[in-house]
Amino acid sequence: MRYFNTAGPIRQKDHYCLNPLKRINLKEILSLIEQKKYFVLHAPRQTGKTSCLLALMEYLNNQTNFKCLYINVEAAQGARENVKRGVKAILNELGSRSKFHLKDSYIDKIWTETLERSGEDGALNEVLSRWTEGSQKPIVLFIDEIDSLIGDTLISVLRQIRAGYDKRPENFPQSIILCGVRDVRDYRIHSDRDKSIITGGSAFNIKAVSLRLGDFLESEVYELLEEHTKETGQKFDVKAKELIWHYTQGQPWLVNALAYQTCFETAAKRDKILQKELITEEMVIDAKEALILRRETHLDQLADKLREERVRRVIEPIITGKMVTADIPEDDVQYLTDLGLIKRKPSIVISNPIYMEIIPRMLTSTTQDSISHKTLWYVKPDGSIDMKKIISEFQEFFRENSESWVERFAYKEAGPQLLMQAFLQRVINSGGRIEREYGTIKQKGRNR
Ligand SMILES: Nc1ncnc2c1ncn2[C@@H]1O[C@H](COP(=O)(O)OP(=O)(O)OP(=O)(O)O)[C@@H](O)[C@H]1O
Ligand SMILES: [Mg+2]
Image 1 (cartoon, helix red, strand yellow):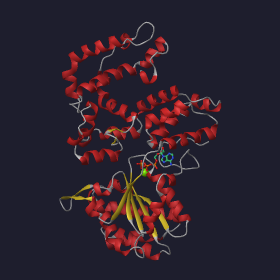
Image 2 (cartoon, rainbow, N blue to C red):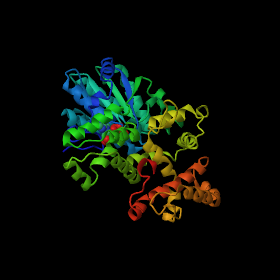
Image 3 (cartoon, rainbow, N blue to C red):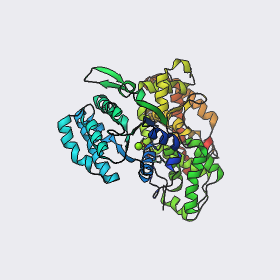
Image 4 (cartoon, helix red, strand yellow):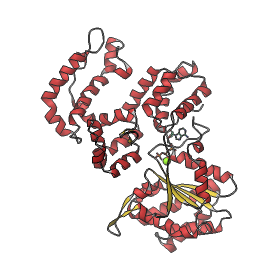
């Protein structure tokens, strides 16, 4: 049985999925390849970049014109600024992937000796030249995770590719796609050797265009959910589908994670599949809560970014509601857009309701943990929530604690809002206990 995938690239055989080639502008990409262009494909984390590149490699290799290879240079990340170790890891990846995907062991045979002879600043260029020269078809190369390389290693790789550019297609790849989170042009690379900052744009000034892979459209989210219904017969209520779209705004990993959590996470849920029980809005709401509390890597990666000063400069005014676009450096806004944290249309907003909920939670998690809590004082005897009491308790709590608490937040400007968020979150988090003791709370779900 297939399922919603939340770990790595999709495999059509194992996972519900949209055709990756329909998510990119295939015509445009093929035309760029025909024109021997070198270009960039970028998108935030877990958007489907690798899935698209792997599908495109398969597509091109099934056609007759090109020989296409996908490599992932993440292994060179550990080498940091050590160019020799970095280039060695990349050559090794080229060798093993070409054996695996193309059954071609040429690179594997020559790379060690080439590294020895040409040195780390020439070996990648030399290996690609010799490989292309010996190939009957022009080569198309995809380099994934390019921004996992840093400093002089990244500069060396970009320069070696640039140095071979004029030899294409006979002696160098006809087309190269660099894939990562950011556009290469926007990299600011610190060179230890040159003791200076080099921009990606200058190290790789041969780039033709940058393509950005978008999130799923609303119709694509429904199409993906429909895969589950087709496979199992279990249907989604219309409202449940709409809510999955609303919470995720089509962020591919979030859609899959929320749908997985809703349909598959527990044995009880898997039983419901067998009984073809309708998936309701309530089930999606509960799954969303659970997903947020679980702090999966995707969400943790975002939380990590909140510590960066340039991220704070944009997020803080959004939280305080004092967003004055003109005051925020364009570079910072672009950076957060590339990370997928914000969207700019029509105005700058956090990308989707799940991130919107996660961000203040992350920023206040220590505060939440340390608020001493008498959980049940705000519940009326009939089980409903006493809002008046909550508000007056908060006022008192704020008067007593605000100065010392607010000082603790890195996001000082947004301190009062975050303090309130922490307080309310604490109330919500104890909801489970209230439910057990008082039965279902009336104000459940979206209103709670
Ligand atoms: N075609 C697709 N159909 C359905 N879900 C997809 C598709 N492509 C990607 N996804 C979802 O996105 C997740 C990440 O996919 P993939 O690893 O291809 O993205 P990525 O952008 O390369 O991620 P990373 O930034 O981590 O390298 C998958 O686990 C899946 O949840
Ligand atoms: Mg990837």
